[in-house]
Length: 503
Image 1 (cartoon, rainbow, N blue to C red):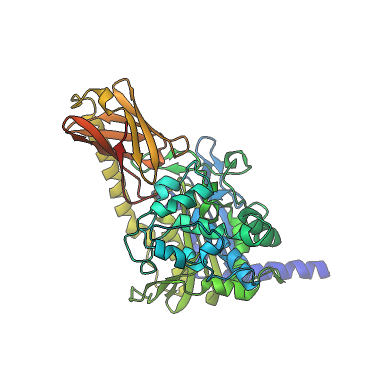
Image 2: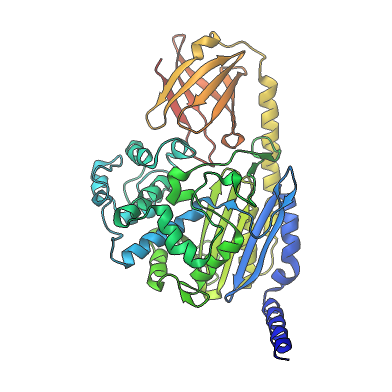
């Protein structure tokens, strides 16, 4: 009889918990997601919603592999990219709480020879500055060099001195992956563990996040893993290679699933506890949420303030504090969000990078719990996405129609040679039939084909579609090739790179 009563109580509790959710969550969310992944060309999506210490939804949609149609489930692995940063920020905050370091320690305390472009700023730069993205550089500056590179973590740190800032030190926010790498590299200096080991031993294992990994390498060989996809430039959803950014580990290398991330969310919502056990001290979590960089204090809708802590954005929305971060790797975009005052956590992982649905869905769910009037955010934004996709398709058709119609200004061999960029390093260009081949020496396995169009323009197609398809030009003076502009996808870095021909 006790067993029957206990079972009935569990059923009533589950029913009661679900009944307490907003109508959108109980009646409409499932169909909203199914419609959204179709509209936004997303092969697969996984979502976790936790509320009041319990999971409301942990579920997969669509497929993880378009060739096999294998479905996404709650344990399917995705790259979470920059959602790695809060794990790093939390680790460093924990070490600060234990008095093993201070957030205000100058980075030169741990790396005496470390330098950024401004030598005076180098002496002042602290661990906290690095996690606040305030070197004075542009957002993503340097990432075309560092992302998927064959550079070691040490070499990336050494090249940071070549990143010329556009803002004064500590004045403006410029999102910086190499900065978070450098902060994370402090961990081995004050412990006997690498960043990977520290995160695993102090966060992942105690939380039971047993299917979360701190390295990309070998991802394709793991069980129940999603493939990465994009439809940028061509409009066709295409599988692309997995990134490998283990050399940027503290900034971007983690792999996880929504089942494990639901535990991370519950810890965030219960002051560092999970299932009644204190995993991390509350002051550690509070430290990660303290304002490190103020981003905006101007009213925007129901938001008045937006700031950045130690690996997490924060803002007010309808009177509640909202914490979140997004993550982007080629073929994957994700978000993790928690609202302690609502005891609400949301995580959304997707395997198509050229879409905004993953963020619109988060806002749609958040709006429901905040009690805002319903407005279909996905539907409202869809026309813009469809227009951009159509424009990309038309642009590519126009480029391809121009290929091979005219002869190059100079002999094809005149364009071949070695080209240099002070931050990136060298690339080599060789002839390949009627075309040119670019070998991107610093970026792992990346090449590009260059086809002449007309008007001194070439169509440059990267071997990894994620990097893009662009029109570009060589710089020619007095009948001699002296340089080349290498276009970059703003998913990686906003500015193109100008290379000088050196031989």
